[in-house]
Length: 447
Image 1 (cartoon, rainbow, N blue to C red):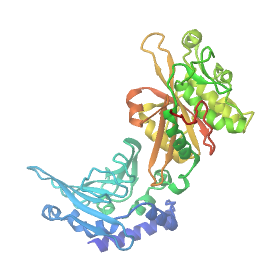
Image 2 (tube, rainbow, N blue to C red):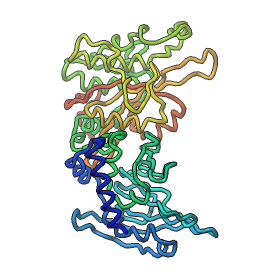
Image 3 (cartoon, helix red, strand yellow):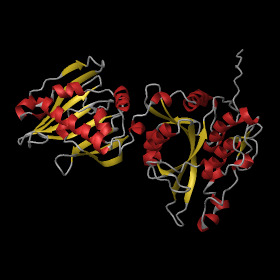
Image 4 (cartoon, rainbow, N blue to C red):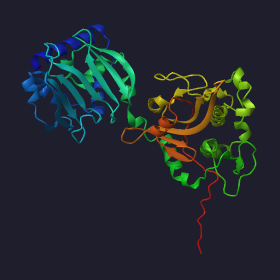
């Protein structure tokens, strides 16, 4: 059964490639996908008869470990069963993980769902194929039967968010259950940018963003917290509002911390920290309305937006003196819609930072968190500032280091504490030199 279908499929694929010319991935590209993505095609093909056989045959498949000799990839095959009076479901699991948790997201793992209730002559009871393409429980492809039985449709989940949907695949679920991932990628390459989801991480690793975050993290213990606290151009602790000196030790608030980070890469080039006067400049030409204009002095609703824009702008001007302040905004992304002066929903922060990490691996970001007030005139206020370093680590996994007021926080913490709110981002290019201000590294002599 399998060999005859394989011959027919190869003939179909050849005609599709030769006549229509709609598949953009070349043979070399297919090979590169095989390298980047651990294939378990051979194991799935060997179990094809069990997956598509009678209910008795489907239930008889035994768990086992298999090592593919051609690639050295280790595949853990097992089944999960949900049995009821009418029949039930069998999940055929082809895992590259180290345990028998079929919900665990491990790159390359397949879960093929087979119904025991309904059996047909096209998909043989297979109702869904789930493929994990990252080491993440919530990043996977889900393929289902299309309205036309000879086709399937695919959706792409990235960190729990549906990024793409209704992608046509010109094969049945039964045929896809025995095909390689490279073939699936080729068949959908007109609709899916696979380099976005399966990037060459070697090109994205080892950049200044990761190094800069790793430099800053151990210095947090030297910083104190202080409302309205900042370090001025001369390196002294002062208050943002009054510019009056702080007490002997001094500390930073969220805005002061963001300046401390930027000063660390600005000072080695400019010779001093950034003047606070440049950072409190208000950009009326870029934001505001008739309601906010009345409250600029009382509430300063756009402080975080102006502050982060000015910080990023001062760094950019070191290399492009005539560049406008609006050039620092993150406002043109492929999978995330930008709202002017508001930014992006915090609930999408993980996929947002992933897109930035793989598209602009040289940059880190200052974020201005903002929300709308519950009372008239329902003014939107930018009230908190964070510093974010998104990057790909040595293992090819996405990471996002987030710093909030002298502390490192998680993405989950940010999402839970700023639920239903927005974050505006400006970009700053990472640097190899960092000179921290306001920290005394002299040893304390105890007598």
